[in-house]
Image (cartoon, rainbow, N blue to C red):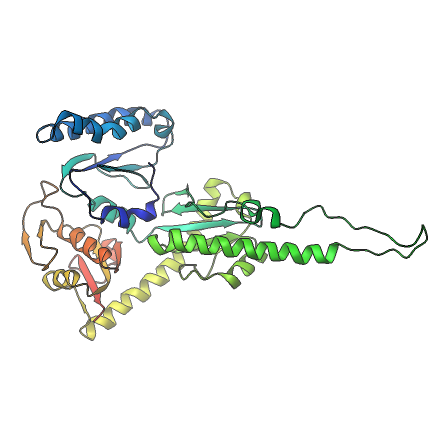
Amino acid sequence: MKAHVSDYPAVVFASQEPPCLSLYQKTHRHHPENQQDPIRFRNLVKKLEESLGRKYPKREVASLLKPFYGLAGNHHFWNHTLDGLAVLGASGMFKIYRLQENVKDFAVVSDRFYTKPLVRVFQAYERYQVLGLTRSEVRLYEGTKDSLDEAVLADGIPHTMIEALGEQITSPHQTVASYGKGAKGPPMHHGHGARKDEIGIDAERFFRMVDKGVLEHHSQTSRLPLLLAALPENQGLFRQISQNPYLMRNGIDANPDALENGKRHAKAWEVFEPQSRERLKAMVEEYGDAHARGLGSDDLEEVAGAAAAGRIAVLFIDNDFQYPGLLDGVTGDFIPDDLENPETGDLLDDIGELVLQKGGNVHVLPSGQMPSTAGIAAVFRF
């Protein structure tokens, strides 16, 4: 099944009975480049099959790989890919993530999922969401510096006002009626003022349902900044009722339906980037203050121990830095090693996983934006 990108922490960090199958692949958005993608996917699945065949009976191997081969033959899926793909599978579990960034082709069978690329992609600091809102419908987008793609709204979030309110919605065609005693009776008008008020109430109820659903099913799990794209009057109403702490101060003051895809992305990045830069500056300053008070560190050994103890509130990881080694997730102790297989892994990503598991925030930044030159930096809770 296709997964929401925001659900990946709960999925990949949950306890899962081995074997765990992890597949990553660079994909292409357009023809003819995407014609080779399903072929390369099948080759990666073959690697999984060979690895499973060394340890598991054929019947179990066939069961585990059935959804992978089903995906390989799904022509509709391969005609609608993005820049990368992650597929995770195990007994009774199959998740597909379309990625807005390239990943290296890779397939492995292990006792746990190989999640390093997902941590890097989903915690990149330049990611955000856009909520396109009108008084009739809602759409959600996932964005980066280079792209903006429509996301699948979680189950339970109404797509339209009619879907949200059903029979309780005010009729848009209520008319003014005149009536009285006989043909000359004094006319009595009704409908316009009352209907206008009721339509405003409908919009408020619809917006409250959207706000609640997006917060619970998207923002709280992804923790991504949320840009609101809406007409000014809808901006004002939604912001009055919104309880979403991830909603950014400035939004896109335009009808989202009037923005073509390229213009929508350009406008979103134009509005998001300065607010993101301001937000990052504040976080780096917070790290500096914490470090001065003994509540921050860029020492790898100290940070690893704090991650294992659940003491890290915010972790910064350098996107251009790797530190191969084996990490003990219970004690935080580690042994430096080489980065030739997923069993070894990258200590920075392993520490990032620990921080996410224990409720901390992780930000993967370019080297030039890091608050430290050590590849890693943490703000401690205590």
